[in-house]
Length: 285
Image (cartoon, rainbow, N blue to C red):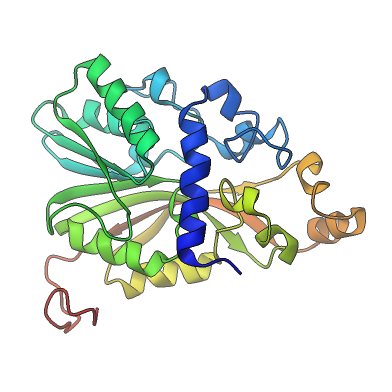
């Protein structure tokens, strides 16, 4: 059993490899890095089409998302937006188009190679109100109550401590601020062998948790007005399943009610925190 730090190191290593690849290379694998764990069809299944959105930049699109959180995030001109797991900057640049020159966008990623790639893209585009900070989204490198909107695209399923992430999202948002986050969740139990495969953990579904648990974490963190804005079942092709499961296992999985689902979730930070928490930093909330 790997520790949270070992899992983080694994993800950082994988996404450092991804940062050096093109979208076409990444799209051949749900893991992002070329490997034997995934099939050619996965990119079209996992990812959404960004190309029609204003602000889209092909150099920043590595084909790693599972939703379009910026489309559902209700951003407006002048907003301050934070993108969790910002990668090469794709969601940040789309957000910047919406918030305009009077707004600000901060991308946070803990892979140095991704930060370097995003900063290079921002410099080429001459964007001066988009900033990329290296950091762990379990301990966001931002001050409290600074963001109007937080977005994230298929990142939290890679994070060991989701409670801590949503606690940090709550801290970073202004009162009445909100988030729109796309992520992978489960309905029912996947075969244990999937969760033991490091390649899947670093890319697709093995780090995902049950949808009910995921939504419960958001509620426990203190958010209100929680809704699922979009839901899409992820149907993995047989050429992926056959890498890890027998024919009988595949048939049993397909016959079950178990599902892998991409969801986009919206929630709001209340104007007043009435949870009766201790002082900030005490760790009791």
